[in-house]
Image (cartoon, rainbow, N blue to C red; front, top):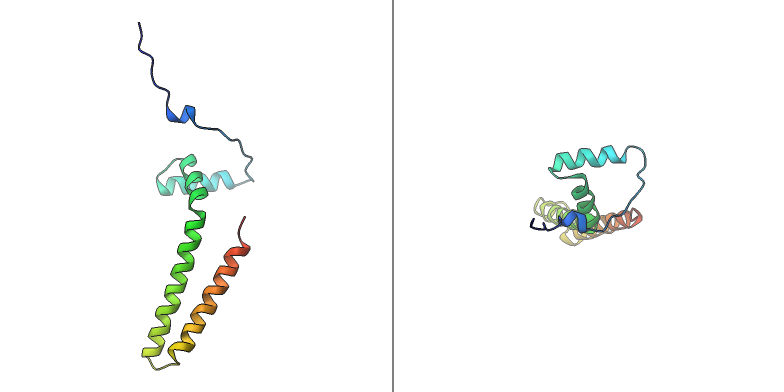
Length: 103
């Protein structure tokens, strides 16, 4: 009697068919190859990582603003408070721009 094999996880996963705009499939394929993963893994990474990527960009921009504030202060150009306000304004503008780009 032949031993019954366990099904692959991919055969048990839920499937969802989607229509892609022209060129998007090629874009996903190129990104998947560049990142060393399958197209499916690339799509999953993009779906799961969207919010984390936004938060990382915002945090990076805020940190750059804060560091430039101290650099400018140490160089004698303006006050720390004034440069901090500029950093906050820059971060707020970045957040507003990202909010507009939400799907």
